[in-house]
Image 1 (cartoon, rainbow, N blue to C red):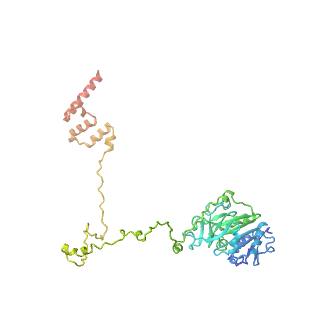
Image 2 (cartoon, rainbow, N blue to C red):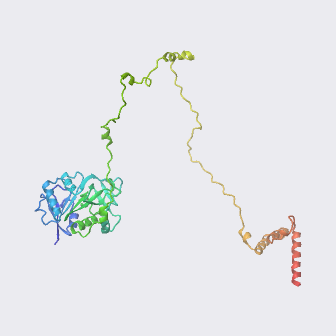
Image 3 (cartoon, rainbow, N blue to C red):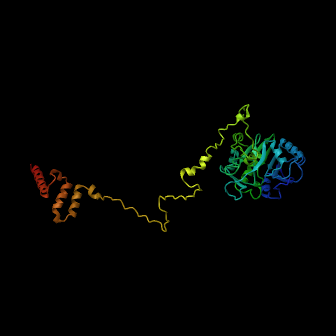
Length: 397
């Protein structure tokens, strides 16, 4: 048997009722609470033994007697949850304004995120209290918020969900929570977000479970630091320039002192017309020797700096640049040893080019440095022969 009793009000023409688009909501709530539906006026007898009462988008107003019953219900430990929408009744707004909350303007989505209708908002980065993050276990949780409104929240109420960074108005409260002595007051800016169509979209179901634990079970509490300093954007209003333009107000300035003589207050030199030169101007054509007739309009001719451009039928074919001139080096010849280079030279040189072979071998062995600039193959052979004889003589000694 459930230890809690919850009433879903149906006596104020709510958008959602137990038998109308609240099936999933009631099934989830019935897991921890007995769910009842009532079309009767709010009285003390109706709320006797009840833990929470839900108003899912009321359209009829709340009278003074019902408001006083709800106030005493809150003080005695009851929980009131009100989901408001656009055209929120003034009686309900007056009731929640006693606790620092007021339903104001609608929320829209200026960009396409998940839903085509701009009034169906996907709240991104809208969590204002770390207690929700710890419960949902998702730092980037998003919520479906269809046809909702923002709230104006002041103390003692605390905003817990904002419109986020992807909706307009930007980062304004949409769900608030208030502790009223022993009871709690929760105001939700959209009744449809917990309807059958939207209950299981995005993280709405996890948010509902958190609210149940916070309101009914009271097994979790809000983060005090986040509650004292919610990261919301203050509302600012753009002046109604059209209305202000229709109510012009003159600028009152201190005027100069007027002279006693009224005629002296007019400065004739600034706005005067001298008629002495009218006759000279009329006779100017005769003086210059030109015809006194209307001037002809001369069509100006402008010199074109460049010839007119003709669009090309085919795009121009750009020639590829020529490859750069590179010097080719035989790395084997440069980095090989003298013996290997002599062997390669012997393979390349035919017997008839013996003189060329001797000259190239002299360069490889650095023998050419021993001679003047003009030397021949005979000079190289003479030097090599003397060097060999000298080496053999030293070996015999």
